Image (tube, rainbow, N blue to C red; front, side):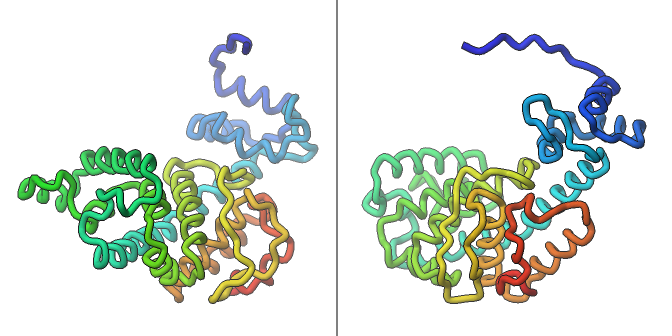
Length: 300
């Protein structure tokens, strides 16, 4: 059984004193107070863990500065904004392709028919979540639909799939029973097999949530590892000696996916510029291998 928590709240000045005692260099105390009054102590703590020499005593490595921590935080914030824009392009396209390929062959309400599901339990759970998500929607096309129609109790797939979450969309695709239709969608994005798209969708849902909820990306361990095929039809990576649960493979599939949708996108150029704007940030914090800039995928 755990120990009862007894710590009390402390002032911002006391927080700074603790950081100083642990060896963090803080040249401008007033600025540090302003930062900690804007960004909470434990939100920043996720960024300064990289600077700690001891994870138990939380003593900082010699030369660690508050300024470098803020620079890493700023980089991470800008990276989330850049990434979220890319994810939006991918997400909209995936919804569109699934609607196009599935609806023409399997009808407007295939997602309500368990004959098109590989697992009945997952089908039931997915449909229950879809009903909740649609009921929460205030989009005009959803409210107008319900004003006009009462049966079935959900709108057709071309409306419903626009308002369900990325996680629900991922589960719906994974549980669909027709492999040919799933292959057709995957091929739209330069993927040889639907299992890769299923994996990337699952990972993208997690990555999207990190960006949407302002979660840290740097030095993060992701709970789901994307499938990373060694050979792809389009420009891809050649080396696979990277840590699988870091951000690097996540960004690799995002770049590949984005390139299949918008070949003239500027994501790689913008990412490299972001690194240049924050010279204290090291790509290895994102899981990037030492020769990543030589990879065909990362050449603009």
